[in-house]
Image 1 (cartoon, one colour):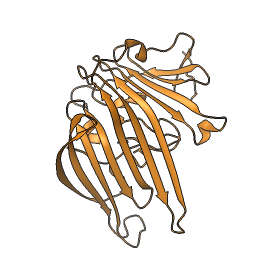
Image 2 (cartoon, one colour):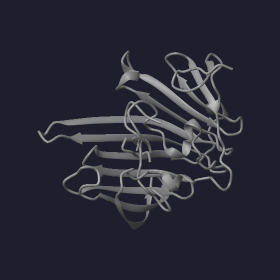
Image 3 (cartoon, helix red, strand yellow):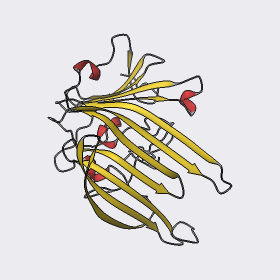
Image 4 (cartoon, one colour):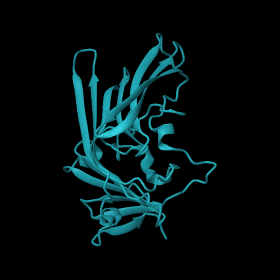
Length: 263
């Protein structure tokens, strides 16, 4: 899933945590995840039917922020920031809302997108506040054998062959929750992708075992710049059930990315 802003991701977000390699967050971890939509989406949201483990009994709501700073050889810089809100209820339904102010989706002004996954009803939704539409697709629940947990792919390593070194950073309180940290260094050897010198990127990922989400991620990659993904104002209270429902005045269509699928 791509985003017009900054993730890939964690989207935007991709580095490795725990048993495996956020969305940040990206490179645009999706990057943080890419640059077209859903940039702020942490991978555990399962948007688009991704096989993330459904987490029940651990409700929360929070604010999320992703910042990317890209510096060029001539000193010029590009600075981009995405902000949003996200939540999960006791039944494992998830919600994320972000306002996009850059890229194709914001050509006619800011666009507010909301992403809802509802494993209870069996659907994922992408809501566009400007058009009052909700694009829907089936939510694919993985079987026990194929299920992956958010910490396994909170951040995905580069696809190119690379040497990976990890180190334990211990525990830290992030936004009021205890988090376990890891430092990850990816080195692409010289010649692996046509590079004359090794390319090294470094990431720092803090994961909450209680909430099963990445709450802080930092990445420095010479190819895409520096990205920081943070989760703040975390509330452990169960969010309102209305948050996970499509508003009555929205038109529901089957298919994502504005491409309706015939019934």
